[in-house]
Image (cartoon, rainbow, N blue to C red; front, side, top):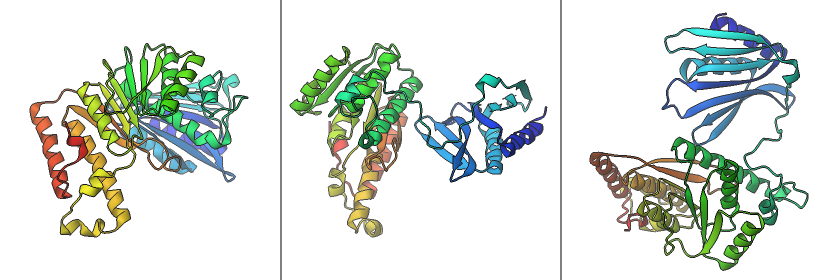
Length: 384
């Protein structure tokens, strides 16, 4: 069977509604941020479309296509991004294997009748890393009801928790840092995310230990009680500020929604500890906004309060990422949840790597040039 024959057969299955699902994988380039693509049929407003979940290193993007568009997407992806495809239909299953030389092998097998199942429901229940069974801590935190169901008003929080765990799990795997973890969550608050990550790594039989740092004593007491009741012997919460608390031996630092310059305090703690991974989701950005004195050319985009505020947010996080790069970290900046779930959804992930002196000096120069462009004489991330 040639690849063109395969595409023709695939379109036939699309048209006949006998296509079940497909997975595209085995990237042509290890540097490609796109790791695999999951495809399945969905019914949206009584129309059949094909849902593509583009799974990147740090986020998932879902797009829906009509049959001919879906086929074009698959052809493009197998040409430019992936070498392999596994396709399941009611009648037959196909395994496509390509080599970079252009050689193609396609194996066709009869479908297993007991495995045939086509779901066209768009809003099906998703399998999540953090489930609902036997989760005492989720009930104690008010996410699950006494019957174990996710409360209607907590659906966004439950979704956010699972997305967060997916991202951190991917970061740990990609950085090859999955054992002997000592994770510190700076500004842990009520501990939603801290508990969930501890739960996930415990399921993976990982020997990670956790410390949640929180300024409010009532939150510390609450979280320690929940940890004890839920059997988390690897998790404790301590009272203190990010700036003043020192936790020895940490190799992963997390700081989510630490207000204003507290994010910078957390980043500094991670760098000073030579942490292998630093993960932060900044909150408000007041310090740089007040320090900005842009030149006349940039006045048009900073004279309006709302535009100045948004520009300051972008510049602040760009400066944080560049500063981390200058300290021998590789950084990624991305949306980690839908903006409808929380407007503060930008995440910065920094992984410790080896860099030459010239590279470090180059990032330092970029940092200085960005500050100069917007007239920022000093920003909090620079403090030592």
